[in-house]
Amino acid sequence: MARIDLLKEFLEENPNDSFSRYALSLEYVKLGQLDDARREFETVRDNDPDYLATYYQLGQLYMKMGLRDEAEKTLRDGISVAVKQRDSHTQSELEGALESL
Image (cartoon, helix red, strand yellow):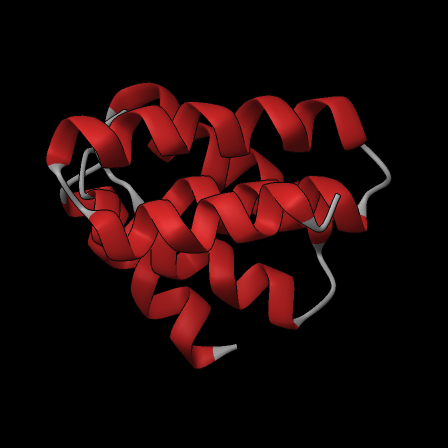
């Protein structure tokens, strides 16, 4: 829990810190707190749509939660962001995840 508490402290100081919020999301996933993870990933996506790593993780989370349509849309949105950023590696990962749906 210490990691979560530390990340929450960082976010109190800077609520727009996408990295800390993304890391908090991953911690919630590890603990099986999927609703909390979803809330935090969605906040990153909504506040910082260019934070590319969020799309893969959020897509995977949606699949874990049985939300196939949301997963597909999220992965497609992430592919668009990856193309815009010319990040072919992440684009490939997102396309692979989309194909596995």
